[in-house]
Structures are given as structure tokens and as C-alpha cells.
Image (cartoon, rainbow, N blue to C red; front, top):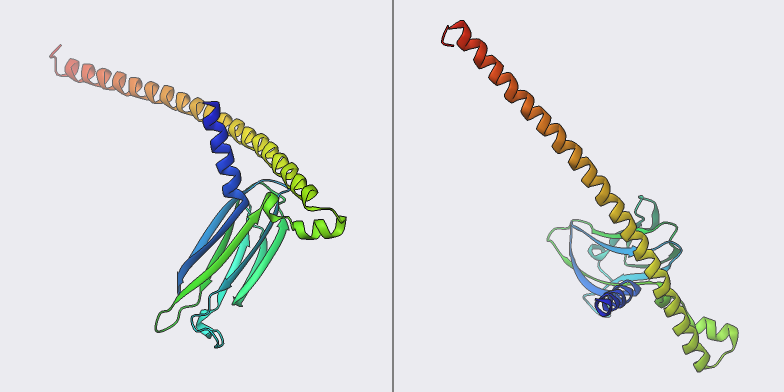
Length: 210
């Protein structure tokens, strides 16, 4: 059980550190990508529209509108009718951050290929600048990377523990509400059954059948 939890934790760390992909976007449609980021985590990303005709200017139909928002709807990046862009910020709130890409509607319809890279945590740190600034050798850089990775795993474990406690509280609250609802439903059903019996008894007494 412990080994499986460690494997799941490592997979979660790896999956949230780097998110690099190519995807297709039809003109006139929107595609959104979400990333679960914890508070105070560093995040960097870049995106660009792949030019279908190398050596020629990018067609006007191959421009996109990009909006990156926080779980509470705050906008962290906004690009309007652009072919490429980048963003960098430190998350002020924990949760799912969403990057939405929208392509203008054109006739005839076209398909855009987007190159998107999203890094968080340790992977978002520019280690070349750290090495240049500190004038340290490759061994020290690797040690710093390992330390940052361990620190990230440590923070992720506490973050997952907090999320687990939130889910447990939500489950307890839901169970309490369901128990109350079930009790009230039982009371209503018994009341209706009693009223039906009283009505039938009164009806039969009026008809002198009882």
C-alpha cells in the first residue's frame, strides 16, 4: 500500500511539473487545458502557432486568442489575436488554473496546430541563470536540483494531505445532510400514510361500512 502511494505521488509530481504538447484547434472553436497548481508555486509557459508554410508569413487565419485564469476567475495572462506568447507567475491560490485557446471563425474552415509548454514547480526554475549568478559547478547544480525536487515532493505531500482532509470534511458534511434528508423523508412518508389511513377510515365510517 505504501509503495503504491509513493508511485502515485511521484506520478503526480512529474505530471504537474512539465506539460508539453501539440494539439489541433479548429477555427471558430475553443480548447481549454487545466493544471492543478498549489499556492506559491512558480509557473512558466509558452505557446506558438505552428506555421503551415515554412518560409512564408503566418496567415491571418492562424492567429489565436489566449486567456489563462485562476480557480477564482482572476486573469493571469491574456493574448488577443497573437501567433505566440509566454507567461510567468507565482500562484496566489491553489486549484485548477485554466488556459483557453480560441481561434477566429474563417471560411473555409482551417485547422491550427498549437505548440504549448507549461512548467510548474522545480521545472519552472531557470537553472542556467542560477548557475551563472552563483558561479557554481555542475555537481552543486545537481545537488540544488535534488534539494528542490525533495522540497517539492515534501510540499506536495502536505498539499495532498490538506486536500484529503478537505475531502473527508466534505464527505462527513454530505453524509450528515443525507441522514437528515432520509429522516425527513421517512417522517413525510409516515405522515402521508397516516393521513391516508385516517381518510379511508373516515370515508368508510360515513358510508357505514365500518
